[in-house]
Length: 195
Ligand SMILES: Nc1ncnc2c1ncn2[C@@H]1O[C@H](COP(=O)(O)OP(=O)(O)O)[C@@H](O)[C@H]1O
Ligand SMILES: [Mg+2]
Image (cartoon, rainbow, N blue to C red; front, top):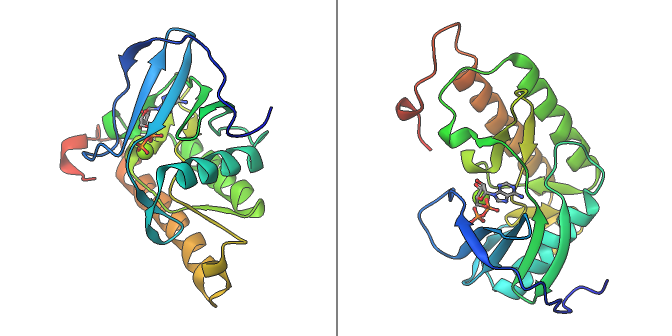
């Protein structure tokens, strides 16, 4: 199926999913057909460029999801229904942002494994918001939201150190999350930690 070709799904918006930040540059909805639709309305930052237009953002997000196809623990792309929107499979889990219990080390071991896999495929996630990490019912991670990513072949990635910096950012963010959620046996209080 060609990117950019609109496919009428007759999907109807039924539920708004929790957002990971306050801006309204995109809306994410769970549709009647059981898929999640992301519609990008305004420019946002991606790949160290602070203002990427919606069409280009959606190009980039879909490109990342296709490059990552088959990596376990990654949101799955389904199809693009317009220049500025696409569908992905609904992943069942609680965003870390709303998860207020400790997590086992295995959650983070698996998350590091996912990051190593995506870096190997030339994708570096620059958005460490806790809304982008889901916890499944068996306490396994799912990584979402590949809008703000750096590709290994982005022109800016030729600047020495940029790839290393992107890699380090995503790993350090995950170490930080691990220290927040594996804090002894004390129940974690989400309100103590922002974002
Ligand atoms: N495929 C999906 N399955 C389940 N929940 C999703 C999915 N995609 C997005 N979400 C939910 O919607 C929220 C916003 O989606 P996201 O792609 O992170 O958009 P934004 O770029 O606005 O942060 C996520 O934090 C998550 O809670
Ligand atoms: Mg997000």
